[in-house]
Length: 426
Image 1 (tube, rainbow, N blue to C red):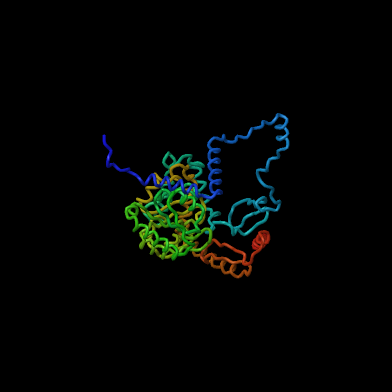
Image 2 (cartoon, rainbow, N blue to C red):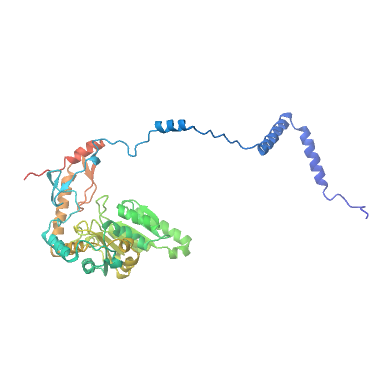
């Protein structure tokens, strides 16, 4: 076949190879030497075996010597003998207004017995009557043969007292709010929460697996900032926003601070940004409001503005357990989704009897709440007069947090606080 007239299809290839050869000849000697070293090094890495250090076995004598010389670290570091944790104060007798602490009678200012009902004869008699009728415990969760008629009676009385449709009873105050939050808020939901909430709420937030946004303590402006940011995120992803539920969790009186939640502003933001409002009234139930119904009564806010109210029966009501109140739709959901309700043994019946008796006393004697407020204000006025101690708690709060005005050592602060203790001689 004739190839006349057919040119080289890629003449530039030959030209490029020729230029590379000329460049190689014109390269400096040090450059060629460096490339040669690199080529040799790469070749050495490819063929060289990895280094494996030889393992030298210890003799039995060496092992025994190492074992004999080994001294383990203590499981617990040595403690100072003067550490107050090693010298707990022990109370003997009733934990009432006057307590016997290490053989000394003291005025009890370190209790949640706000209304002074611990020693009330009616409560003691109610407990004895229930003990004779029901025994000392229920030995079963509410959904598994642990529901006793007195539990239902207490739930009805709590719902009526709080002016709500229904109540659900828990056997442990701590598990009430820590079970209620994850019963509603799930993975993918958003919770806005005050950064100063109590430990029970914190555990409920963790259990919910929701996205948590903490706003500065009692700072409504910071809360609105977070709500606006969420609103912008919802606009960017409207499909996700349709299935994302938003919750706002606060306390009536904050356990860790002793101040009152600005509920009117919270309700305003709740309605503006469409969030569900949960209030833990562990410290405000039986304390705030004319009749002790809590922070909603204190600010004269309709119960319908709050989606869920939780509280304890271990403070103003001197018993055991906790409860949630709200609409029937909200409360019934917890009977199948509240872990503390479903899997914990129900409240001992005699404790339910004590709570019923305490509610009856509170309903018939609203002056108890008035007296408590007067005592709180009087105590607050005395505390603010102390120059070396400060308190940021509300004057109506029965919880008073004291802080030293000037920096001092722990021992000095402890001695100063001990100086407040009043020993009573009879």
